[in-house]
Amino acid sequence: MANFLPKEYYNKFLSDVSKSRIPSPIRSLMPLENKPGLISMLAGKPNSSTFPFTSIQLTARSPTDPTKEEVLTLGPKELETALQYGPTAGMPSLLEWIWGLQEYAHGRKRGEGWRPSVGAGSQDVIYKAVNAILNPGDSVLVESPVYAGVIPMFKAHGCKLVEVETDGNGIQSSSLRGILENWPAGTPKPKVLYSVPYGCNPSGATATVERKRETLELARKHDILIFEDDPYYFLYFGTKSRPPSYFTLELEQPEAGRVLRFDSLSKILSSGIRIGFISGPEPLVNAMDMHTATANLQVSTLTQEITSVLLRSWGYDGFKAHTEVVSDFYRQKRDAFERALRTHLDGLAEWVTPEAGMFIWFKLLIGDKPGEEGDSFDLVRNKAFENGVLALPGTVFLPDGRRTAYVRASFSLLSEEDVNEALRRLRVTILKARK
Image (cartoon, rainbow, N blue to C red):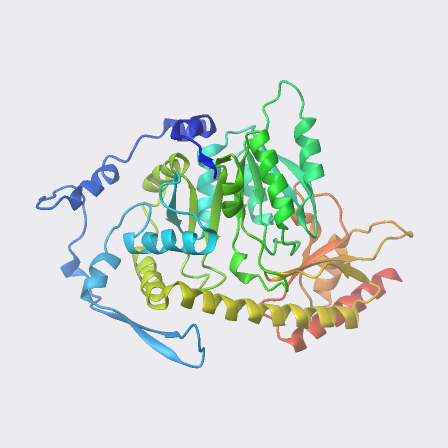
């Protein structure tokens, strides 16, 4: 069983900005209001009797039978907290559910040196983790290709992005090992490795358990934190059993406490409710909460309460049943997209079948000479757009913006008819460009 890293270990990972922050003079004292019998004159909370809302009623599909619906009601008791300021880290009821989920799904328990905190989507907590840990000029290891949404985040923070090669099985440990073992002497090694291990955006790859173990061992050897950005964990539809997460597997290491896990409810409940959460080492999460306390105070208590009421009514088995229905939905979407790829782009593109998520990453065979990799940017961004189809050229997922023949397509929204028409138009565009 792993030993858990002590709190003082994380001091060296805190950024200068994080170290300079002082606790919010109001929010840092708000937990004291829970003392029985206390009369608080602390916070400038509006009086709830002035709020116009008296109840909210929602109708939700059953997680086990989507043809049936159930009614969820937020009455006066729930609205008393849902419409008021709340704790920085999240509503107690939702945090309690997250504690239970991480034990249910990942085998992680209280008392292991980590805790959860709720954010306005996982992008919010990733940004705050970057701010809490990294300084301008720090190097960050990122899988390549990498989720395009974090490139501007890291670059705006003044970080240097170091690309680690990947394939259909995730991060190539040989690439990661080579980078770290040949790191320039006298130059600080990276503090962080960023990865999307399930249904990676954009590549669609799902990292194998063997690759994850190798990555964890290298992170331990070279004293690196792992940012496990995992919005597609519950959208796994592979034929084999779902590989365990980094958050789970680090318990096999001699020391646990290097994984910061980022979860999102956007892909499985609603992207509009903006609920994501981090589960990570307590000192680092504390630093992130100090950021929240001065930036946006908290995530909306109303959306947290709506989410909490729904999830508590389902229970963990109901939540699992719902995610299985959702993942099967996207499996069917993936299958329809692959059928269309074989119909329209056979001989014009190649790809690896994704086992999770909502993206296919395919390479256009458009080189001017045999064996030469072409550049998808102009063809996809301009010519295909003019022909009525829009996708993302692969260069936007490469930190240095180099040319590539790859394209990312999302299959989440389109009907099979629209997919076929889109790829037919892309085929016409490719053939015209070849001439």
